[in-house]
Image (cartoon, rainbow, N blue to C red; front, side, top):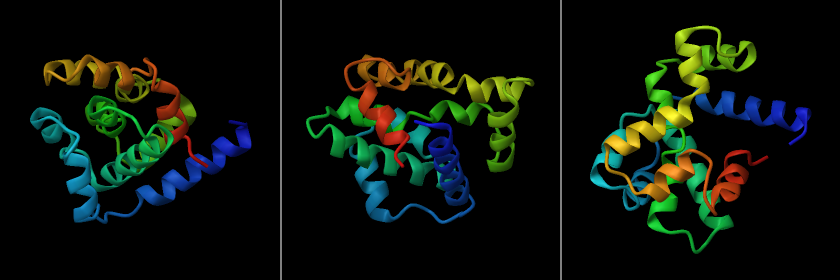
Length: 150
């Protein structure tokens, strides 16, 4: 992704994150079909904007990888779950993205993949789900493409 494309992508994500609208009931039902009970509890801790984002990413992921397993789709839905630990709202996430990992919370934001993997290990998630959150495994490129959709 070029720098200009990345800026446009981040701008769209920012605007979308300003809405407090809940995901549709159909989206919540669709998402929870792929999540184990402990994963579902984690996913429901996400704010509405993050829930909407993860559903959109997971739906694009399934379009790119129609044979994806339940564990892989769960990984797409939970790819940002580690952001729960940083406790940053939208504006501070923007600042963290721009300035980098200069505070404890900003470091947590930048390490959300490894933090999320730890959370998912504690939730007894499938190793395939955990690997995908870490950006590893055969479906990692599909998740990256789905998350960086322009």
